[in-house]
Length: 207
Image (tube, rainbow, N blue to C red):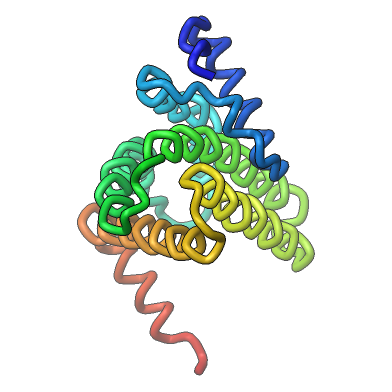
């Protein structure tokens, strides 16, 4: 909906979140409700502002937990994730010869990321407060993470890029590996102590 660029910024954000919610509900027509203009592409990075209050809340909560929180890593990763992903996906989709609908994919991805992030972080904080050592809480978080972080994102890639489900799974895998690698590299550079502890713990896992 290219006329969305005539909306005020608050209305544009609400409209975009509603479009993203339609995609989260696996509505194949949800892409029709995004502003897919060039202006809409750049405006979609306002999704960072939508996530910011919950991010600040998670940092405050994490500061009260045991152990040192990698604040520098988390802050930098939070602010660079969407722009960096957009740059990397630009080259990746062209390498895979599926870049025709790249702008539409970034628009949908940014707004879905905003909703997914807020839902999963808030759900995690609530579960941690109400039942921090309950196995059922972990199961609920894993299920939510799979639906929002895997299934919905897979559907978004499939729908926005107009590719097969199999190819969308490959794009999703690349996205996950890139995001994980970027976070680990930031952790190694900015918080080497936490990085070393994390990998020491991983190496000591029972076989």
